[in-house]
Image (cartoon, rainbow, N blue to C red; front, side):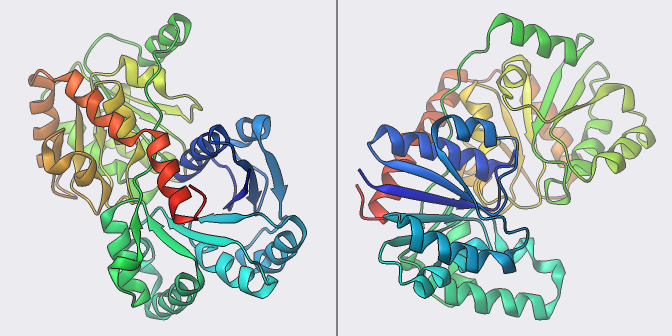
Length: 363
């Protein structure tokens, strides 16, 4: 049995954090010991992780505090391998491992398109990003991205060849039909009868929920209701926009739910309106319930998951009219739910877990 350390900023309710908790369960089922090493031991998924795994709190409120704390951890606990998920830990961990004299493997795993994420920060920041990425990736034992597009971005940023990066699609657990009580609670939150359109994700700029509201406002289905499942910095602005568009009475801001399955199970359509995505776990979650999907064709995960439109509708980024048309068409077209569920099964957690273990030499 080998000890695997999963390094994260925290365990907030995001896609990468959900992925790492699921991977930890798979590693444990394959006989490995897992502990979460967190810059801050906080977040919605923390109680779930604490039930089964050790939690190490580095008490590092900022990235610049994390290097020393991580060096001390590696010297004290000596795991066999470290999976560093999310920038800047993907650069910090390999450097800290070298400084600690760590003999185990370090895998740098990116879950976002960094060049897009940090594009607004200015030339100096972008240059610093490239230098630090290049250093961290070269010191890492292995490097993985959650989509082919993510890997291509990692290679371009670090001036490395693409064959040094492995694509490991995010794992998504198989759908489990919620109990009647949970379904009834979801039905109550949906409220009035009518077509139900769902999106799931943090309310932050990259998700471009404003585009979804604009598309929903011109959707020729006056009985439809749109639910935004998530929380974040954009909520107040989105509520104002919904009122300006005259749709506030048909838009439901449902907040964060640890288990979104009752909402997938009671929706008619899932929509993702992001400007860019490393992968797009929520698309696979929707498919696992046989739910039709409409997504922007953003870099880089959605097209890979939907196989260029085979398993869902893809529309140009930022085009509200195209998004509304695709939503209307998807609602009018009977879905092959069995095919959608089969596609979701391609992302079972055990597949990703074994790929990570192979990269770490622990398979």
